[in-house]
Image 1 (cartoon, rainbow, N blue to C red):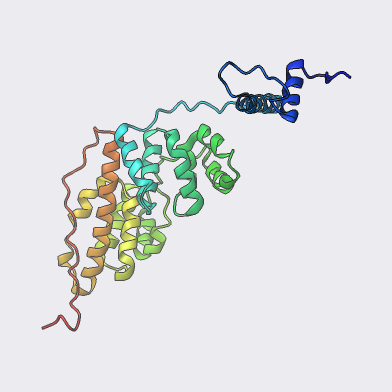
Image 2 (image 1 turned 135 degrees about the vertical axis):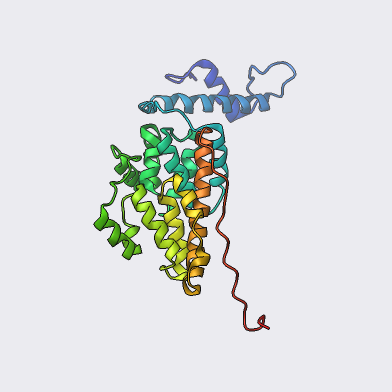
Length: 296
């Protein structure tokens, strides 16, 4: 009776017989000094692995290559800052980094694609359109391969063709008056702000017309929108000339705006060393009001 199996070589049949009957009853071509049973198991493992690889290669097809991003990567200093930002919980400065990258015409380095896409998936605070502009066509191509990022990709793709760096139109006199009277409306003015809108924003902060509780958040949003050269005018305001009722609110808002503007100056310098930050002049902080127990 023949032991030959169709499509299987004689060596494979001998190895199968040895595995079924034992190496003491069927010889295997193990090297001298090698345990036949051990050699047989290792040989079977190698052959099984080769079979799986060969079988998979007949079904898998390489995907289409991603598009080429002609933009340069971020400078080393800016990349180092981003390395730290992705480890922090807050996304406010991270969003500022993305805006500065778009203005500088550079793209995200591939090692930052995944952490930023994950941050955008978990938090709506990160501007997804700005992220899409920083990722570029190649980064978005990469993101489409992960279904978990589908919502982020849809929002990020809305930035295609958008002009990320154009300044908003300068408000006319009527607009300036309405914006000064309504701080909430001021925050709806297109970003980035022009010099006219920035003057109104600084005036609103200096007047202390925003409630003390909301002054800090308002100041942070103002600091993120005004041009960088607003820093000198912002820090030149003297809240001490205001009446005491408005002084605390003015200082809180101005200090918050100054802090954000200073962070933006640091980012601008990281992307372009020729943009040297001015001398820092932080707004004096508001002294804490003593509690009843602390009062003399």
